[in-house]
Image 1 (cartoon, rainbow, N blue to C red):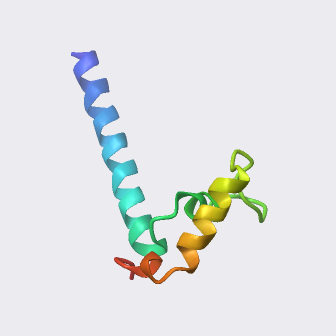
Image 2: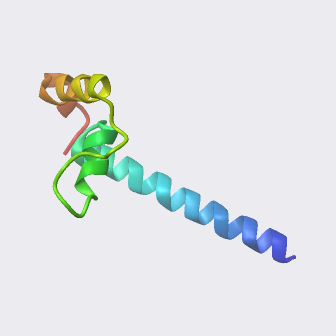
Length: 71
């Protein structure tokens, strides 16, 4: 029975995380690097970001398509 309860709790956590991700996408657009940077305590970008990915995200953010489906 405990395993079932733990599974349900894990499902609720995953569901909350998914809902949070959807609300962040709705608010900030679909840029995972930008969203990750909003949660950083100090200004900057995530340390795992490579320059090619960063350039791709920057182009995405400045494009008109970035604001599609946002509030």
